[in-house]
Length: 454
Image (cartoon, rainbow, N blue to C red; front, side):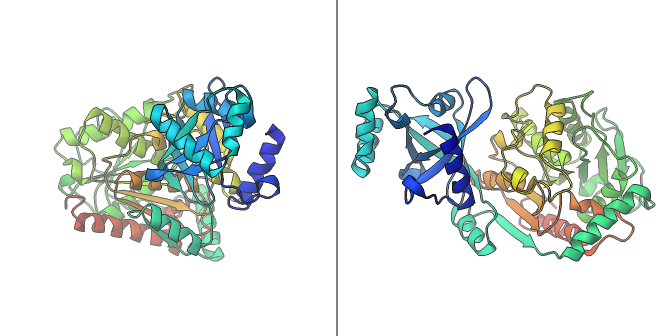
């Protein structure tokens, strides 16, 4: 199909949840996005497909009967990790080129379903490759709640998704509270006595909601956001104080190194070093909660993968608020929510370029969604439904749940990126206090289920 026609089909497919008109009306189509074998750019094409056992989808590299294999086939041979869009789900999948008896059997089934495949093969003068797409994770687009919940619970049975209602007044209160923090910082009524002798050579600040808090009940590590390159030393202790209230632990606020002077993996190394220092000083791994927002949420998830890969004991629980999880910037909400949020795609492109500084965007741990998520500790993921990183949180939650991780996903209706920052206000809005209460309840519930030691 000509490129412009492809784009027309893609737009119609996405606008109508998989339904298209014209010559493809009623056809079973998917959108396949591959990574260019030479360019590294992302390319999307509409393709016909068949279902196969085990949840696989089969596509055939017919190229309309052309004598050469299509570009998308060459791309997935070089990089088999692909993205598949169907009528409801967007799926991260692994592409496998089938061979031998399996290829012959499934191609014969395709021809039985549609004799046109045999015609394409005869016209092309080549053996048409049959490719199996095996789902590895999935997320759902913006649909009415009734339509969303059924596919989520049918496909990812262990994923706990909660929609927290909010009103336009809540949104206004959040924005006003955050704006007020720019000009006026509330006093910090907290104990800032160091709780441990050292933190692995990484600077930061201890903050506890109650005086004399001991580390026997555990420690919360707080990794601040700021697009990997900014810090707010006046405000971050206030966030640490609120996290100490919610997690009932002293909090260490990590002052990780910042890009562009210190790109990946400097900040990640700092988070890992602090965590290891806690364990060296006798804090049980299971009693550590690691929490971060925005780029700090990315670093939290990256640290889990780095620690797992190194064989370190993992923390008892982790919280990521408004995280960027796919540094290839492939999440649909980066475009669908552009203009509605306090950040946009251009910001995401800038911060990822500064942070990665040439490192690959499609590899873990720097891009957490692309890692092996098996064996991670209980996760709480939080996002606002208005933010451009909404699908980054949803996709990671679905992938982690599919990997057997205990995942809770809280979606706050109509809230922007990092809306929780309003908890730092002198009088936090009610939706911010709801966030703190749900965080506290989640920690308590995780302990009650035995997933995290008391």
